Length: 337
Image 1 (tube, rainbow, N blue to C red):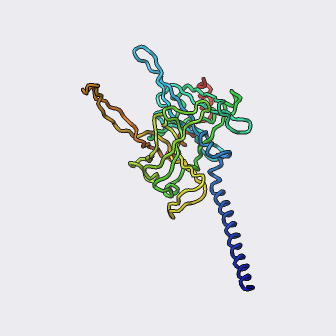
Image 2: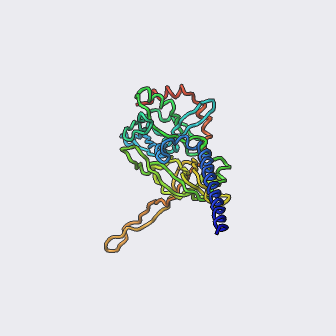
Image 3: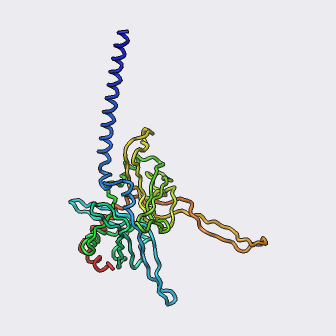
């Protein structure tokens, strides 16, 4: 009996030792995960998932058209998001990004921003509408891709001065864009999120966009049709143009090399939604007596979206640098309506 008791104490010590090592390893793992993700969570200080909704705003562009002696307004609705370019030496520029076809040839346009509470949180429902003239002079265009950017740091400064209100917005930054190495670490099928305004739909009272969820339909580390693009299996409609496409794994993700689950957070800015794929559906309208009346045709979406790779935005840095802040301040002073 004494020998058995001794063995029991001995094995208890072993089990306690293993448990101690396991607890310490788990705590060490959490510290490592937190330090690795800290650079990505810098912009999401309150609640990460809620901040995603504050990355995006609805963009409306208005084009004046004269038809048969009458002047009408043609409205273009799309999605835009905020992105910060870093030029070093503490020089940064926040820009509004969307597709070129959303704002091209528009005479003026507007977008809306939520104000900020004193504690730094968004004041949902207190909306500041920004209307800008001189649209054609303000927007900068990508040389080959369907992208447009609007430098708004000078505008935000003018809003603070003129309206005496602080606006609340979150912005994507350059470090969220995966480089070639990071892209090759992604699996061929990744869960993605797209945030925007399909058919212009949103929570208009609180100024909150719509989040859609899907998967990559082609491997993002391969250029679709030799273009800096990839496909998505996600519902997309007119108005979604310019929506950011994100990977957001708050708890875990699959490691490509080991095909195992990695516990930790992961956040990437993959691209910008630009268009959807549709198919032509044909039919025939038939009367009650069975006679054919007319052939009908319509185009229907089948849930495939095209995304432009986020790295294409970095090409735009040289265009921003060529425009001085002072010149934009003067443009905005004359553009604010």
